[in-house]
Length: 462
Ligand code: ARG
Figure 1: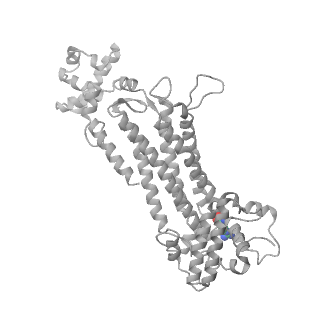
Figure 2: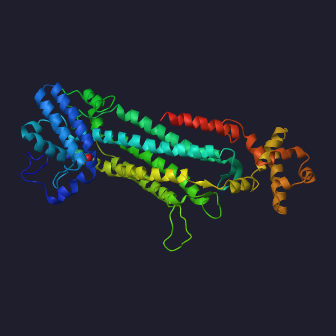
Figure 3: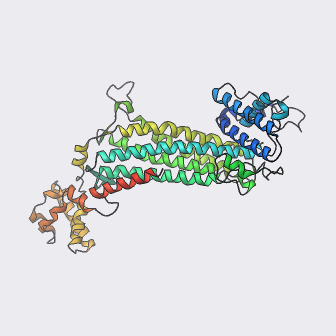
């Protein structure tokens, strides 16, 4: 006799090829503890509806607890012909309680409402784990920023020198996107919490008087699904979760790319710690930023998981279709990927050593103080269009003579424009430039210190 949950109307068992295609225990077994939690809550509503006696309920809960112990201990495993995690666990319960009592649990529920609920439970737990790991990375960036308050570096646009900024300001610019990812995970969690599908049945709800809100609260949700068809067929919660993981991957990949560039001989901005870099099997001198490269590579994988999932969901008619079984592997992979990537990445950034002398030395190079000349002229009431021209002429003169802006003499300056009095030199230093950008969010030292406090307060809400 087949272990399938649906044998009644069939004359024979499924073809081997179908069973092989249909089987999902190789990936959905990780949902087993959540399925058992759902079963316990379901047993309680069956009891409340008068469909299990007090003794039945106690035996059922004890049986489920025993099954959970065996699942966690690895002594109960899915069998070769168990179709999915639900089938395997029902078999386990029947083995423990006998067919009479064990066979009562399935009343009023379907694998469709079961799987949607327990998948939410699993994702919520891993959302919390990923949040903690992302928070570690935020705090690591904040620590590095605090350690280097006051260190200037070349700020870039188009990867070209643009204006000097504080290294701390730059590091915190990588922390804010991660704060928003944490916000996204929290928003997502609240939305999912209010939508427990258990009790939706296959699609239409249950005739047995089972209370879905009771089950929802038992399972740590705040409410049950408002629509049983939606509850069983919607997977936007999976896609949204996959989006956040992809966005975290993209955010890390931007940090990764900078670490890779900064660690080159040509940049020489950072040195990686030995414990967080790798060597070459042939070139004895090599020290490679493999963690950063893997982060960059895995971002592609995380994006792929999201794209694949959306393609699976597109144009599926209501309600449940078996296509939906394809919702799990991509997001499981995204979770596994981030849970292994984030600790390594955080370690790499925590142990990064900055070559502050080189950063400071390069900060004013590439005529990065030209904007300061233009803005100084504007403060002398020169129209910006003219000021931009004058500052540009200074750059041109310096390029011609292969000197820096601060090398221009008083008479050089006056020859370029009568507005360029010697007082302009006050902004021709990195310190002057940085200090002048003192509006909220700007790179002046006081503002960056405030920003660090603000970031830490935001981080503390997660
Ligand atoms: N294993 C399925 C899934 O992951 C749930 C089973 C629903 N099967 C069904 N024939 N209704 O979505």
